[in-house]
Image 1 (cartoon, rainbow, N blue to C red):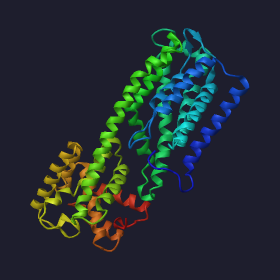
Image 2 (cartoon, rainbow, N blue to C red):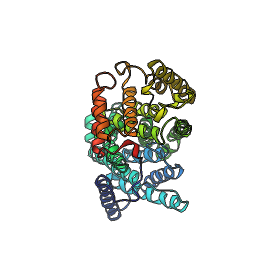
Image 3 (spheres, one colour):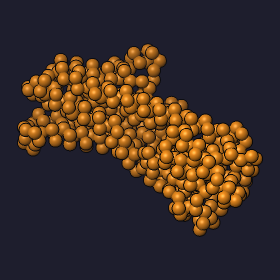
Image 4 (cartoon, rainbow, N blue to C red):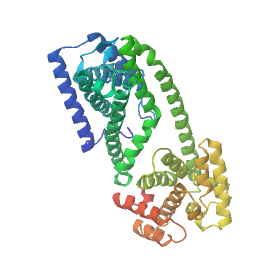
Length: 428
C-alpha cells in the first residue's frame, strides 16, 4: 500500500474490501469447523507454506506490490489443487480459504510480537483473491466439468492457467480501489483516476506476478503427480526471484533517495524556493495520472520533476525565485543540458535525463513528460510570484498555450487543481 490508514476514518473502499474478506473468512471457518478438515496432511503442508512465506518477508519496500510471494504462490497452489499423487482431493473451496486465513493469522502473531506491522489490507486482498480462484477451480474440477472441457491430457493445464488469469484481473480491482483510497489520504488534489490505477495494477502483473502465478500452477500440478513433497522443490526458484526483486527494489530506492537529496541541493543553495522540487514532483505525478501515464512512465516523470532544476547549480548568481523562464533561450538550454548531464550520473536512467535536457525546447518538440514538468514548474513559479492566486496562475498558463504549454496538459492541471480546491502550490 502507498499510505497507511491509521489516523482517520477508513475510506468506503477500504471498508468494503475488508468487510467482504471478513465475511468470506467467517463463512469458510464456520463451514470447515462443522464439516471437519479434509486431507489434513495437505492442509498442513500448504498452511505451513503460506505461514512461512509471511514470516520470511520483510516490510514492503517502496514500489513492492507483493512482499510475500511465497505465501501468495502457496495459497494459489492450494486453490488450484485437484489431485495429490494421482488421487482426487476433496478439500473444496471453503477449506482453501479457511486454511489461508488461519495461516495468515498464525504468521501475524510472531510478527506483531517482534514489533512488525501487519498489513490488514493485503491480507484481505489475498483472502478475496484466493477465494475467487478456489471458487472458480474447485467446483468445476470436482464435478468433472473441467475434464470434459479441457480433457485429461496436455491441454488440461490451460484450465488452471485460465483461472489464474481471471484471478489476477480480479485482484487488480480491489488493489486499485485501495491504492486510490491511499492517494485520497494525501488530499483530493492528489487523487488519481481509478481507471489509471487499474491499468497500472494490471501492467504490474507482468513482473513478479507472473512468477508467483506460474509457481502456483506448477506447484499444484507437481503435487498432483508427486504428492505433498513437491512444494519444497518447486518454490525454490521463486525464493531466488524474491531475493533478486528485493535487491532491485533496494537499488531503485537508493536511486530515488539520491535524487531527492540532489533536488534539495538547489533549495539549500538558494537557487529555488523551499519545497519547490517536491511540490512540482507531486503535482506533475498527479497530472501524469490524469493524462493516463502509469508504471515506468510515471516514475520517469516523477524523477524528472524532482531533478528539473538541478542545472541551476551552474549559475554564478541565483535567478529570482528560481524562475529561469526570464533567462535568454541559450542560457535556458545550457542549464537544461547541464542538468541532464548530472542526472545521467545519478543512475536515474537516460529517460529521466532526456526529460530534464528538453525542458528548454519548444513544447511541440518535447515528450509528454517534459511538457508536464514544464507546465507544472511554471505554475509553481507563478504562484510563488503572487500573481493573484492559483486561478490567475492557471489563467496565465492558458494564455501561453499557443507557444509555451500544451493545451491538454494545462487542462489536466486545471482538473487536478479543481479536485484540490485550487490550493496554492507554494503553500506546502
